[in-house]
Image 1: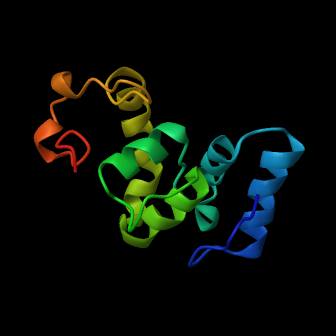
Image 2: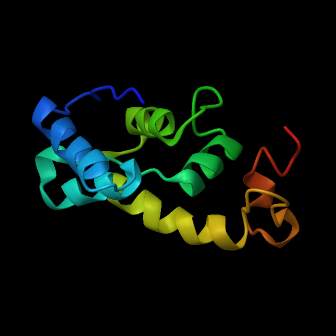
Length: 120
């Protein structure tokens, strides 16, 4: 997998994340949450739920193929103060309502705002 430095991300932060990702066998999303406690390395934690929902809501410039690509897209426009919030807000929603297969759009309070629910 290729990793790219985001604006403001230092090589030290990337290496620390990769050490957790590869060295400890963590995925990139949990590894990305650890730097939240060491602010220079802050990055949005994007797992498969956030990746799927961001694409369905068209929060990315184009459909992204990986959580890493989605993270880079979100970090371009999402205010930095929300990077630590996005994962916690969307994971449960992705597990209960915005499912990978057969999303429960009729039960979703956001269906009027969702391009995917509108068939767009």
